[in-house]
Image (cartoon, rainbow, N blue to C red; front, side, top):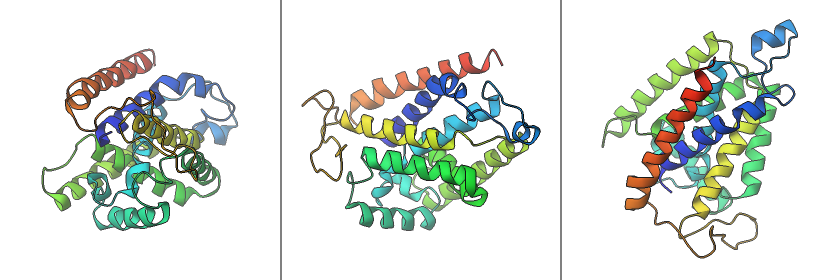
Length: 242
């Protein structure tokens, strides 16, 4: 599937799952509440929005194994070099990064960063926000470096807003794992499938032997608009009561 489809799916998955996740122990604590020793019973509006962007960005992480993809140009040379490294380690596009092992591993890493490494956590959050913004098309057509600069500015601005609202990131690991997982599921719906049970090489298709053609009319003219409407509707229903 294309980048914007993955990102929209990630955002929709987070917004749909957020109320249930907020009921889990320690997943809805903002930094202010942690300091006060108080347990929240729901994500704050800022945490809900941050989670949607993070999950949308995480839904792009598996495609960092593709250096030629637009998403690898998000932050210019930085993400391109990162993509080259991931591609080499994972064995090329739709290799190890398109698996349950990768989804679980990145989720565990993000959870560790959220609890033990504030600097690493912030770098990861910034990267994921940038990936999400790039995936939904923010930038200048055919202007790689201009788009990268716009992305950096918007990403830093959003991250600063989240910091000013004392967003907690106890939910970070789950958001990253969910984003990667919905990417894998989405690509299993395409004609090429994914090695879900990597290191086993078998590629899985859902439904069996029926695949969506990536980038064709159905995805761009039907699926993407539907996902956009779903995300907007979920945002409205999640934020309206707050």
